Amino acid sequence: MSENSSQAVNSSGQGLTAMQNSLRVAITTTLVQVLVWPFIGINLFMFFVFRQREALRSEPRYLLFSQTLLADAFFLLFTNFVVLTIQGKLLLPLVLCLPLCMVMEGLSHLSPAIIVAMCLERYVAVCLPLHHVDIFSPHRTKLFTAIVWLISFLKPLVDFSIFLSHVSESYFSQLTFCYYEIMLLKDWHIAMRGNLYILSYLVVLVILLFCYASVIVAARRASGDDRKSASKGQRTLLLHLLQLFLCTLETICPYIEAQILLTGDLHVYVVVRSFDFLVFSILSRAASPIIYGLRDEKFYAAFRYYARCTMNQAAPEK
Image 1 (cartoon, one colour):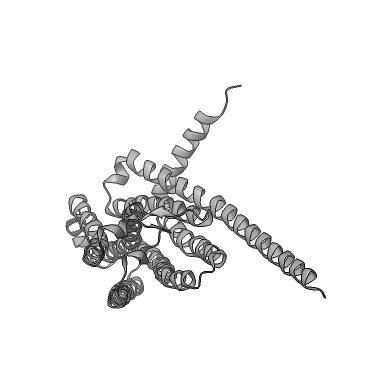
Image 2: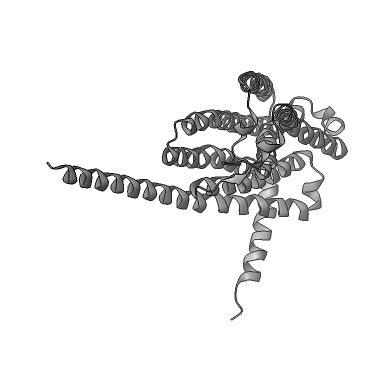
């Protein structure tokens, strides 16, 4: 085979690979958009339903549930924007990426923290019913949610402070893909972040297992309506454990993506980033509307009522 023929074959092979990569990215992008926007819409609509009903706003479990709806909707919205920029190979200024990454990091911590609060609320409702009104009064529940929001965004603020102590002003003029690891410039900082992740999720897991075991014991001792309520709480806590597992997997994804980005293979990084967002981010946040929305009789009744009103208003008059 001549040299020109060999070059033609190589050029053809590279062109075919580029077409396959482009097709793979296009399919992944389309699939992500088809799935992410319905869940954003469902979460925001459920939050609207919560705001419309006084009976829902006065109960602590729905107050906590509304926070997951709001946090998950904005997390999906911001993360989807970042995924689209990566799929479009669009580099953004660092000064824009940093606050965006901090917000996404805070929102990613918020969902597991709210899950813990919801599990504790169910534990108190089933195991300590006489103290439930005092511990989870509407005022105290709002205070708990404010504390959870503050704690969730405290860590990215600390990371940002450490980041500022190691960079100069010229660093902020760079263009980059938006991923949280751009703030982790030192190996010890990366190790500290990983250790804090492990520690925090171990604490969360211990709390969830304690609540689950306590509710199981309460369900065995109860009878009649109490047994039915305890069994329902047991199933809810089990779903929360599954949701926490998915959230835990999601926190591992940025480390894998950062290693792939170091290899310089942008196509593989785009596909992996989209896959992680599709499977872990969307899937873990799709569980919240099912667990506390469509499974709950009172909330589902309100959801169905406002959904019918919306469809009736949208339907053209004959």
